[in-house]
Length: 235
Image (cartoon, rainbow, N blue to C red; front, side, top):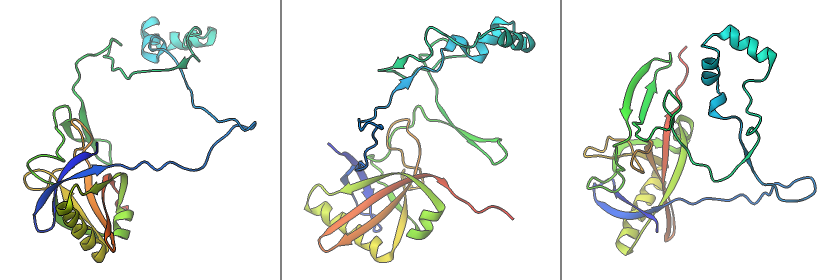
């Protein structure tokens, strides 16, 4: 089942419609020299007991002793496990003592050009906002398609689809308006339509841009997501 998104148009009329992502698979196949299909494998690089922090502890934190140990042998290599093929792995977080952490607080940290921390947001408790009482709203900020492609890096795109005849007209008119203008419109979430778009709870915040295409009785209304804006270098 596709997800549901609550969205408004330029006249602030809103509706719940379907949204789905299409994955386009390439027709190009990569094969080995003998013509067999290739397969990707994951190999173990090293174990946590042999990382730099653990090794320094073995040498009482003295870097010179650790360097001597590297010259005399290979203390940084787990010969029993390095190179093993990995299957069915799960991502785990560990604390400073390299023990599994079961309770986590995840933060999004924004840094400035000089590497200084500008702001920090707790992303653990931020719920998705694409299907709440507040629809995604047109902000009024529009960009020519060529300008948007130059200014923003788009990571994901989702197609909005109608679920009945009423929502067909609703989405078709939005797509037709955007195509006729040759523009993309910035959409925002929240009561004022100024919040970033969150697809899932604790997910990454994105800027949302609507692109519309219409031909005869067909349409495509696409939600593009971006979290990077390219700015010109200061002279």
